Length: 99
Image (cartoon, rainbow, N blue to C red; front, side, top):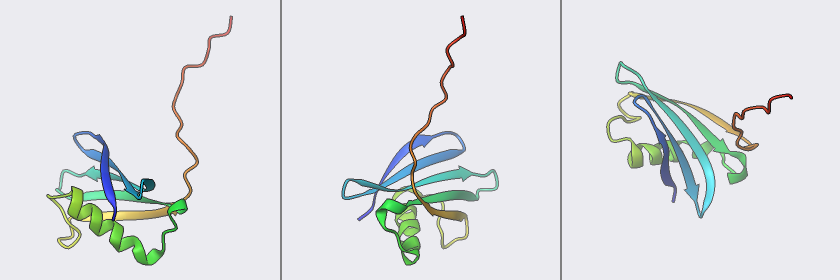
């Protein structure tokens, strides 16, 4: 079973992390448009061993768990799905000043 956690929420976007068995398996960024449509990018982590046939499982799980106002069946939700490897988290940092 996929468990979803909301990591970030703004007025027009959200980020979710999917886990299964204590392992991170996917991330989703959603953007809420003024038209009422929602567009998102789904990142399926290579380390989770995803098969292309499992994409609908992920989308349906997110839809049913976290998105009460939109759904795939009504056409108010559009996704781009990416499968790949996570290389890490990077943050901007202030460079030390030369003296």
